[in-house]
Amino acid sequence: SWSSLQDVTGVAVKRAERMSGEHAIVVEIPDTLPLLNIDERALSEVVYTLIDNAKKYSPPRSKVTVTARMSESGIEVSVHDEGIGIAAEDATRVFQKFYRGDETRVSAPHGLGVGLSIAKAIVEAHGGVIWVDQPGGATGTTIKFHIPVREESLCLPN
Ligand code: ATP
Image 1 (spheres, rainbow, N blue to C red):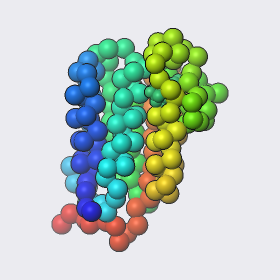
Image 2 (image 1 turned 45 degrees about the horizontal axis):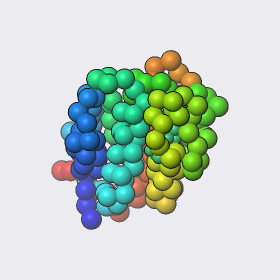
Image 3 (image 1 turned 120 degrees about the vertical axis):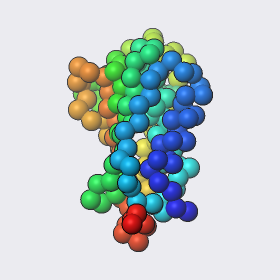
């Protein structure tokens, strides 16, 4: 069915805000975006996982920024936080099932290390890619994913 990036991110942000209201979740999305014939439920699940992690691994009341845009070939969504960051050597490992960072086992002891592996499986099932953008940076974490959208799955606003 047809949905917009606002729908996909909006569902995820509302759900993340219900869980606990400590972080400022900022959404930056252009006003005019096409409608897309995409799997809204699955993709908002991915966005939710990224926001949930951003909250878990950053200080209370810090900012989480959700950005979405159309690229030439599809959609690109980015979730940025101001937290502990992901080391360069962990950048691919964090997507492995059951992998958890060293620091993480101390600061958030109850995770299983599955969220990002599920997110990756969903993204790849839609022909997309997910990655840690500029890992090892000094200013938190940015995770991005891209999903290709074919032209016939686009409904441009007039
Ligand atoms: P679960 O998903 O079961 O709650 P988890 O959060 O540990 O546990 P993943 O979502 O798969 O599992 O993340 C794997 C690891 O990647 C985390 O343990 C953490 O070390 C690292 N990680 C994920 N997101 C972030 C982030 N936003 N900032 C810093 N580290 C992160």
